[in-house]
Image 1 (spheres, rainbow, N blue to C red):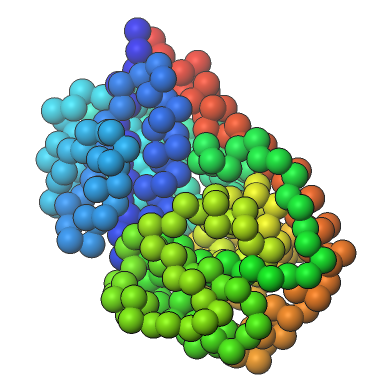
Image 2: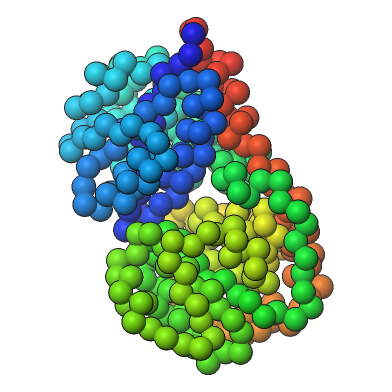
Amino acid sequence: MDLKIAIRAEGGISIGMGHIMRTLVLARELSLKNKICYICKYSVENRSGILEIQRNGFKVSLFRQSILEVLPNIHADVLITDSYDVNEDYFMKTREFVKHTVYIDDIDSFNYPVDLIINQNINALEFNYPQKYKLLGLKYLMLRDEFRDLPKKHIHEKVEDIMITMGGSDPVEFTRTIVDWIKDLKFNFHVIIGPSFKNKEYFKNKYFKNMKFCFNADMADVMGKCDVTVSASGSSICELLASGVPVIGIVIADNQCGISQKLADMNMIENLGWYYDLNEGRFKNSLAYLCSNYTLRKKRSIGGQKLIDGCGAGRIADFIESNFKNR
């Protein structure tokens, strides 16, 4: 008998789209054998995330205050939660209405009373999770199809094209600052304007001869064209590693600190730390250093593509189906 699986996730202007995008990868994998639906908290902030889920063909049930407004009527076997808007009481109450509870975590902020914990990040093994079932590390990375099984990246000796991405929403609006810093540099910049940016019109009214503003971008296509990327240290980092694009990472949210530092310690990326500590001179120096160092860029490109195999969502689906079905 197939499982009925409910997924709770949100995404939007202030929280970004990472929770939505990674659960959609898992949802597609699980939907091959099971019935999937989403549960989302309704707000103007979350609207772009809800629309993205619906565009991907999944039914969404909405609640305004508590998930218990809808969860008892769904009769799910499994509830997968990917949200920071939770506490111990949330997990204790939701487990009364489903057979199995799963939490997708990044920061280990408290002892989650769930059956299965998933942390797909490279620093996940540094956390001391007490749960019996836990799937930790890049082996369980939920990577989109377009970033799987990519050919080896060809690294050019001369850098010409550089991608700038602060994620799907850029809640701190750091893209504007970077645009100002790079407007006179002699590269071709591809600046990603994500679907949940606060003010897209700002960029539509800007013009610089060395810059292309990419709305509704095909991220895999842009990454394929670029020699270097300046990126927020969120979910895009792993897509860049899988693509073999050398990365300069910038931290714009708490959950990115450990990931960015771990990758820097492994010499996989250049980590510039928190955006608010960064100045124009340090940014330009770091960019110039990476662009001028062909050997380092090639080494990191090869290392990144070896690090990620893209089979994480399948491994998670297999585990859930093997351990939670008919129990």
